[in-house]
Amino acid sequence: MNRAVLALAEGAVFEGVAAGAAGTSVGEVVFNTAMTGYQEILTDPSYAGQIVTLTYPHIGNTGTNAEDVESGRVWASGLVVRSLPKRHSNWRSDSDLRTFLERENCVAIAEVDTRELTRIIREQGAQGACITASHDSSEAIDINDCIKRAQGFQGLSGQDLVKGVTCKAPIKWHQGLWQSKTKRGAQHKIVAYDFGVKHNILRYLTDRQCQVTLVPATTSAREALAHSPDGIFLSNGPGDPEPLDYAISTIAELIDSGVPIFGICLGHQLLSLACGARTVKMPFGHHGANHPIKSLASNRVMISSQNHGFAVDADSIPDCLEVTHVSLFDGSVQGVRHRSKPAFSVQGHPEASPGPQDVARLFDEFVSLMTAGH
Image (cartoon, rainbow, N blue to C red; front, side, top):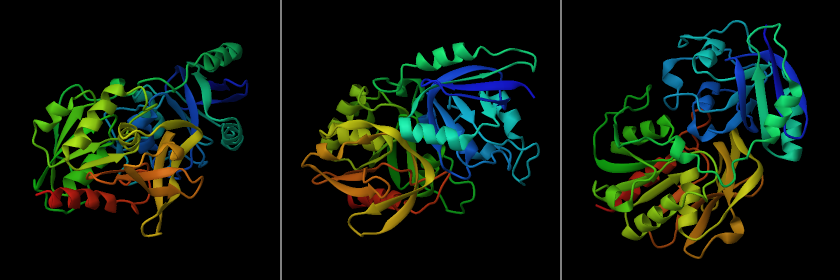
């Protein structure tokens, strides 16, 4: 097996074996606690700029397939796992994980003590990291160079990563959930802002008889409203929301227009910023498919899929917004609703993929808002 090294900016070094493409990759290292869904995680554009550590020890057991991708490519800067099995088995599989990673040019390392790595991230916070995977077993890896590369990572704060993941022109979306038997139609027209959208979000909207037009992140409010939409959707995406001043000002205009708006993850943060709130960088973020959140209206607890390193500052919530959901892990804001306009958002991922579908009913709330507007 070819050698690989993971170095952290704080100086810790983990040696292992190459599990994907050969080469060097730098990014912010985070940990994800999901037990399944590695393919969906890797292809989620929200992970752009991040090296993902999966805390579940056995990754790759079910291989990969063409249906479980959440975008057109792998966006994660790298992958760290404890054990990559030599064999995979699943009736839907068409490739093993190692081959998939090599094909997607994703650098990965296996045989790492992910428990120790997770402890470091939890105690010291997400930080710069570097993975170097050798081309052959005899090739030496310069560990000091790896550490310097990790320390040279500029971080995600203040960086606009959205322009690198958004679509370049409007796209008509037609695909629904692969296992769904819903009869699809076009009862509602939606303009969906692509800040790094996951395909499963679009599938959920399509299955609710929505005609979805995906537009670039820089689309103006005037251009969006020219589609005569029944609703506006604000997608998930990577990085820091505050540098996205073009999106924040556009969303403020869209809120004033009175068109129903629903935001998820980065879209939630941008909607909050457009209303006057602030966001903060979290120590190590929320990444996983087992995060409990509570609805303040119903007092109901739901298990959700999460992927974000920034959060809306609870102390900055303006009077025009009310908090609708909170995290039971740390009390952070998980949802807001506008008090006078038909606009709401959620921090977690109701579309799951991977994860539970407890929060999926929020898609129905969005449809209800649009129905009420007719």
